[in-house]
Image (cartoon, rainbow, N blue to C red):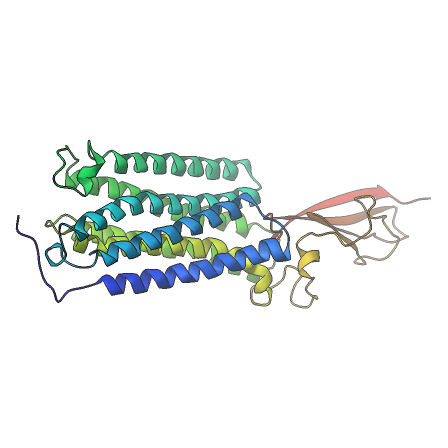
Length: 368
């Protein structure tokens, strides 16, 4: 067999530079997320667990990619030691595929968990749950297709093993399907679902828009998935040169996973950037402390409802109570029937970082 060779071409350093950079940024963002969750608001939810797991797997995948590059990925197969480096490079490729499939799936589950918590309508909750279940099932199926694409897995890296494997077109078709699923979930979780949910929240418009923009960063993960599809179409399987053909696909897979981690974690960093994102209390209001804002009670224990005083609206009695802040006021002595607006701001996340407001009007008769 004649191997493709061009010693002047070596994209390995480029692959490592790009992937290490984006993985490092993702690690910093996740570390900041954990600091906010555990150090500031003392709350750790399923979304944090999913995202932390995704980061751990992404780091492991980056380590595997480094091994791949050291053994030939980024160079033509004719320019590496085929008996020594090629088997190791392909073994590492075999390991990295399920790792990044799992990492990307966990990112979707983390974002889905956050959206499910803030969803107020059953339609949204069912839709989000359906996407999460579908993504999990599809990822498991993809892992099995990788493992069983040959009747003997050793054939993936050892030509001396006699086995029957799927042809290149079948593998490319599965890659298209996987990328399409990732793109669809990015669009659903980044735009289609959160946009109408957040637009209906009773928060200042600038806060609403900023939150939508942050969640919309998932579109960049979608763009990375599209770039990966482009290289699958234009490069993969054209000739027997897997260490060269896979370089861009590997790079964009790593970028897709880590950009998803970054985009999915940025909304949780609001306490660190609340001056930029704004406060739901408005520009003129004093921002509360992290503990008070995110629901750690600093008031004495007692009834969940404050006594309605006989003061003019909008004199408020406020109280942070775990996940709820209650604001009350009365209409004055002269009215036989008064209205109190009681705002129940339920946290949109377990981190208590975004507030959803439900306004309830209480009608009562004044004392004679």
